[in-house]
Length: 343
Image (cartoon, rainbow, N blue to C red; front, side, top):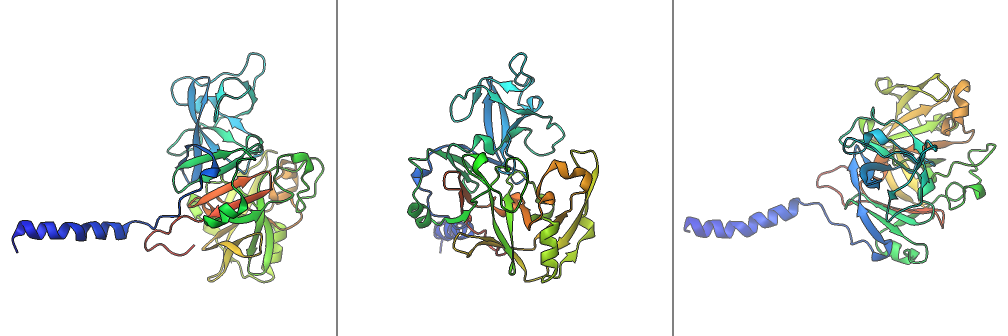
């Protein structure tokens, strides 16, 4: 065969080989998820650009925070936005899916946070309780829908989503939440929290999309109550190389011990019907055993019932719907990469 003809015949074969190397594509997302804007994944966390007083900054969509924050010094450009005179923390000119009324935000300094993107702030659940939100990690999009026009359950199920209950922990009105695993005076933290399971041992876990667990992915923080429960049935393996020393709001250090699950054991995200929506092996567990002097700082380490905190990698390869009206999350795993281990 002439060389030119050989090349022509080889092109379709090359095209087919390239197609075979591409990851499988997930079913299209339904239009009822609503309007969209860009979502950028950096250090495993979901960022979206916000405009404040005409200046652009990248904010983390942080489901693990019930208060939003701003770091004026880490906006793009030389100057960050300024608070209203005399307020200290109220910012006008915020544009997030359209202009917003002046917002009171926690003013923080995120200049020490390392990563490809400068972190200009956090969008916490206080700004996410009036709409249904979808974090589409797979396609780099953030969706927002009104309650009336949001997707019906049947539509979500038909497009591959499965529901996870966050009843009592996350909703449109924090004052009505009971957070049964965290009896406490005062209001509950309005943070999506779902059932999780290791073997037959159950706990409730906060879904923390702002928890960068890239160093030991996937990571799961657990409290003393769940650790003691697990120790009776699961031989946890100490992983001292990953131990941490953390500072706390009380000015005292907290020692965090690391453990590994034994082979064959997995962390399961438990759906509303009791089935495993996601099952992950090779998880590193970090024991949050909050010292008495730091208990006023809160967190799962102060809870007296089995509780956990999911690292960002538990959900950042798929699509997550956050519905405060029904107090549920819906999750659809992303397409598997060729040759990747099962998650």
